[in-house]
Length: 452
Image 1 (cartoon, rainbow, N blue to C red):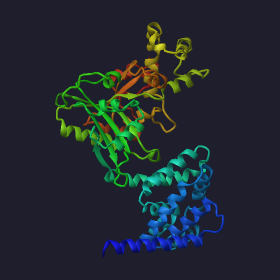
Image 2: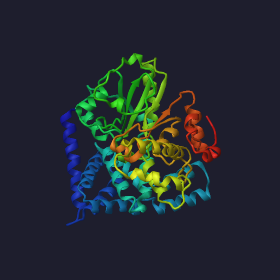
Image 3: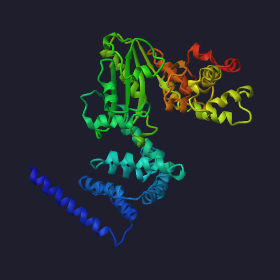
Image 4: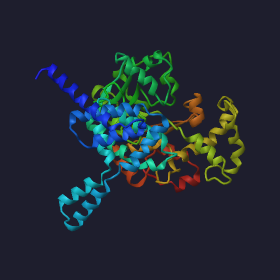
């Protein structure tokens, strides 16, 4: 079968599908209604080749929607593409009449929302995965004002959790020879410590004591999903500025004893809630151990991004477990600009803020019983230990506004990761060092459960 024959065949299929679309499309059909017709045609299962063409048409039509039209279609996904009720009721009756493995399977299949089958067929198109990620990003943007989209979001999340599991992801090291279109995205997606220029990026990639790794998906080979920047050092760092300094003396990679994960950035909003970071860190640790046997310590230098927002909420309460009345006047200094440059103010605030940030990380919990800080949840959930808290470790405007300049080391002890991870998942236990626990106020220290 030669290539000319294949081209002619595909052209013929395209013409047939276009003809079908012309018959489906009434005069002045609204865009969302056209999408609805395309979706139903995709679900009819006319054949893989036709589905590829139809999926491409669907994605092109979706891209052309306005914000209001897009929301209208997403609402249709919720209302009209749930489980087939007639099929579901029939399967339920069959299961009740004859509870066998076959009828249980039929019940499971009938309970699946029709939109999941639609998403799988859309994914047949080149660029389908990327288009579906954009669609979920749109769902997430509208979700706060339209909570009825939660079921659509949950279906996306479950589907992506299987499509983007560790078995499908490819780990690649990025360096200064990586194609520019990918490096440009690293600059754009960096979410922790802004990359100011190409020279700044070069300083993070080219020296012998720097590494950067990213996960990619086979259908999106030029689009990083998540990446981590690593500094190879001789000790555990206490501040970010020396790691990112314009002029510093790199050390030979073979002399490093510590790998510092100082920035982890998710690149795809549409993958929110899909666990990629824990896979990434664990595989990067394995890669670094194989390359550099001298590495003994694996640790982060992490921000505390929600601390100042939480502290402001506590200060606004008439009665707070974490802000005592006699400290309120002192904490008012935080409202002034550049308070950390005033030596006296900084010294006075340190004695109040250190116990507060320790409580924020160790004591304060969400309704589900997990730490309120998102970075803490991430690393503790991956089995790390809260090792050290550093005062005025990040004095950039972002670091001061979000975390009062605090940064934290989370230690990944390879022989304790699984135990810490299990204790955190099962009981919400926070693995922490004695030095961190000693920062707590005495009343919290008595209540806080000691564990390794």
